[in-house]
Amino acid sequence: MFEYSKEFIDNKIDRRTFMSKLRDAGISTVGAGTIASSLSVNAAAIGADEVPEQSRIVSGLTGGEVMAEFLIEWDVPYVFGLAGSEEVGFLDALVDRPNLNYATCIHENAAMAMADGYSRATGKTSIVQLHSVAGAAYALGQMVSCYRDRTPVVVTAGRQATEYRGSNGFLEAPNLHKLPSDYAQWTWDVTSAQTIPETLRRAFMLSEAPPGGPTFLTFSKDHWETKVDNVEIIPRSRSKVDIDVAPRDEDVKRIVDYLVAAKRPMLFLDDDCVRHEISAEVQEIAELVGAAVSLGARMPIVYPNTHSHFVGNFGIDQSLAQSIDCFWALGGHMFKVVNKAKIPWVKRTAKIIHTSLAGSEVGRNYPVDLACVAGVKATTRAVIKELKARNINGQDDSWVHEYSIKRRTMLDQKANDEWDAPVISTSRLMKELDTQIADDALMTTELILSKYHFWDYFSIDHTKPFGERRHNYATNSGVLGWALAASIGIKMGRPDKETWCLTGDGAFNFGSQALWSASRYDVPIGIVIFNNGEYGANRKAQNFYKGRTSQTGNYIGVNLKHPDIQYAKMAESYDIKGERVENPEDLKDAIARCRAEMARGRPYVLDVRIERFGQGMDSEYYDYFSLADE
Image (cartoon, rainbow, N blue to C red; front, side, top):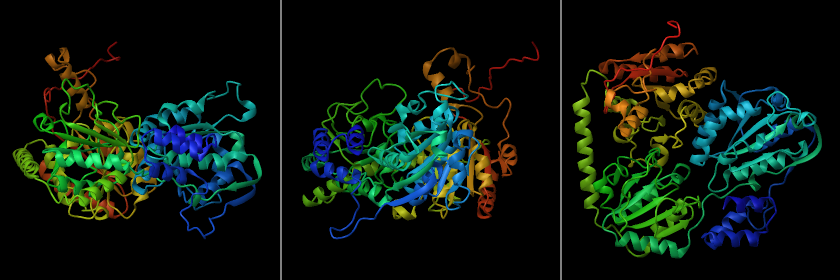
């Protein structure tokens, strides 16, 4: 579907052909028309007798100044980046434009993740400025996160001047614009200063076009420095993409048929639900048809976990998984796991439905009885309407209530048993945070083994309206070093909300450079490092292999305690206060000190030494050799 959108925007196919291709791909006529209109330059949401907003013509500016004026015109307040020599023409244009802020990062990993977080928090497309092949290469990891989570970000990179191309100059990369092509919606090498505003417009729209993701542009140095006589900046109001696509009526009816006939239906929320907020719709459907609600293994909590129909991560309890007779996957991957399952995650006799705007993912990993390429929000709303038209007012949900109560009792008992453990338990840390953090806080998480503790012990209240409850942001890409920088971008996008970053020590080390930006810009976030002194997921993987590492307890590349990293001291080097917490009884006061520093407008680091769990948790082995001894 994305390729058709690109051809339509580039005027390679007309509207009729574009709509025909979308219908052939399984999209309804209404949905195809919506996409076609939203991708058209004349598609402003105006009345028939109203005059569309007109373009702005700028004259006598450099390419860099034109780009800056475009971003201001399109209400883009921040450029996230790391300055370099090829980009001086653009950077120079920012000096006299104080309403376009440059957010300096000291590593491109941070710039990319900050932009990602800002886009998630605001729903707006952000922009990143990188330096040549070096910056693009450093940023690629977090571009993968944007791509996997369908976050719209426009990424730019400078390169050699046109006359110097092909000379194999310093940092030259002949095909730089193609470098991230597997992880971008669109890549392009800007051809001239005159084309800058139209190319930027296209990059923003294609970043937003379903299913969404980063776009990547490269600029020759001289394009930002060349004077442009007259150039048109088309307004934002005439360049917006409708990202919700209606399903076909017959698909809606079949979905309802399957749900109503089922005794144990399951609603499974995956990738699309990061970008499309559907918790209210899912809750209503679950209550109407007596369905359980679960999440993909690497998802943030996009559904309130206090709701009695929430059952956590699908597949952890195989007895529950194998009892499901109707499974509706709302979103991309089904399932994104490390290893192929030995038995089907959903029994073959169950009715399986898969709905997503990512057409390449629908039915990719699992046989489906109904593959529906459509927006998850439009589809859930249509299903609710159809259920009510049939007077479905609530089917038997006693099975899911009983399961939920049993699950909650077991989790609470486990937390009670661990409360007074000499080493801080992850469950206690979560419950202490849950008690003190604001009811509408924004929570950025990058917790690998501790992720489910967040799902299980940190409350997101279903009784509160969406805008008044806590929100969780996380990436399911598996690329570490995302959360700290993303939480800065999230706070920049929502400065009115209390914002936290919960990260493992391994993940934190991949993105610790973002502390510098948090300090420079007085970003008041609470940073909690879940420090177990190891890459726990790697120990788990080596145990799964059942080789010599698990037999001996000599886990290779796992231990992070030799040397023991003092994260509070690391923070101090960036002029950020912090402390290490090792005693469970000190947690409450430490969290209060963190919040107090946040209230003063500054970040704070809590380095919390937590338990290890699972096979090999007592191992202190580390791979060691001394060059001094040599």
